[in-house]
Amino acid sequence: MHSSAEMFKKSVGARFWMTYTGRELIDSMSGRGWNLYDSTDTQGDSADGNRIIMRGPAEKLQIGKRYVLLPICDDPRTPARVFGALERIAVKLKRKMPTIEIEGVRHSVTGFRIIKADEVKVNTPDGERYLPYNAAIAAARTLFNTKTLRYD
Image 1 (cartoon, one colour):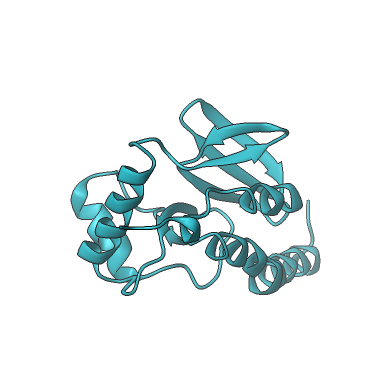
Image 2: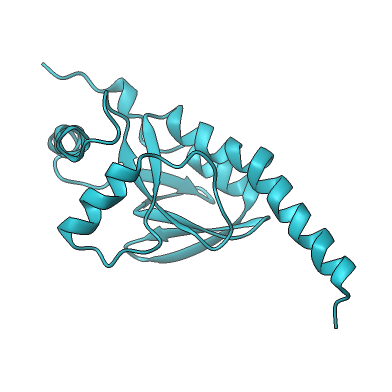
C-alpha cells in the first residue's frame, strides 16, 4: 500500500515531467513539421477528426493520453487547412505514411500514447512499440520532415 504522501510525490513528479520534459517530445515533432493533437476520446470518424483539429495542437502532454500526428500549417485549428496540408504531404509521399526510425528500422507511424512519465507507446500499422521517453524523442527526431517538401 502506498501512503498518501508517496502517492502525492508520484503525482507531483508526473506533473513536473509533463510540464517540463514532456515539452521536448512536442518540440521534436514540431521541429520536423508536425503537431501532436489529443485524440484520446475519439473513435476515428470524420467528425472526430474535425473536433481534434478544432481543439488545436497539444500544448503539453499528459500521461494516459493518445496523440495523433498532423502537419503544421498556417491555421492549426481549421480542419480544411490541416487536411489540405495532410493531402499535399500524402501526394508528395505517394500515399505512404510518414516514418520514424526505431532501433535502426523505419516504421510508419500513426500516433503516440504517453504510458507513464518515462514510457511512450508508438503506434504503427504493424504493431505497438514501447519506448523509454528519451528513445521516443530520438525516434521523433527521425520523423519524416515536412519542412523539406517543395510544393510546385
